[in-house]
Amino acid sequence: MHTGDTIKTNGTIIDNILMSSKFNSWFLKLALIVGGSLLLTISAKIQVPFYPVPMTMQTFVVLSVSMLFGWRLGALTVVLYLAEGALGLPVFAGTPEKGIGLSYILGPTGGYLLGFLLSSIVVGFMAENGFDRTVGKTILTMVIGTSVIYLFGYVWLATLIGFEKSFILGVQPFLLSAVFKILLAAAVFPLTWRMIKRFY
Image (cartoon, rainbow, N blue to C red):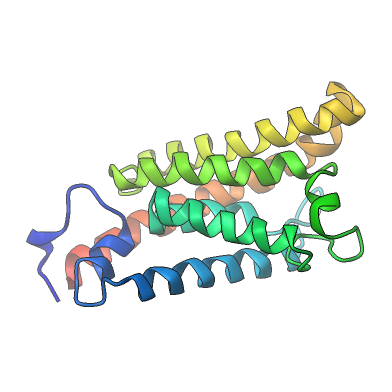
């Protein structure tokens, strides 16, 4: 345990809870990466009723894991998840019904998967520099991370079905759920930091 006075100016939640302690080890980092990839798989498989379409919590988990872990461990978590999918494990949303392996990755949702990786780097880097400690900064971080995911997903899908249809099918139905996830993160992360400062 350490006091609130020793909370790092820069660093993630994981940095402050675990990595600065005796638990800082390659085994712990590997466990975090594997555990994060499992969370991504679970979040892809569970649909939550929402308007206008059911949502998964996968983008929330991608961005949250990156904010928790930082950009290196966050990106490695997404890389492991993508590697699992590329090897044919049914870790993606809609698998195995909609295909598995590289054929799925190179299909209509491939851009979103690429966006996962790039957003994990951006969001993780911002979190390491304190952009998850206040409501305003968390919202900014989540907006940027979400935008990266949807931008790559939209452009990728547009090459297959056109820009207008790509927006109608690949972006517009998910805007409300994206706002919900951003606001959820804005509530969770600053509160978590306040708890860390209080108890550590």
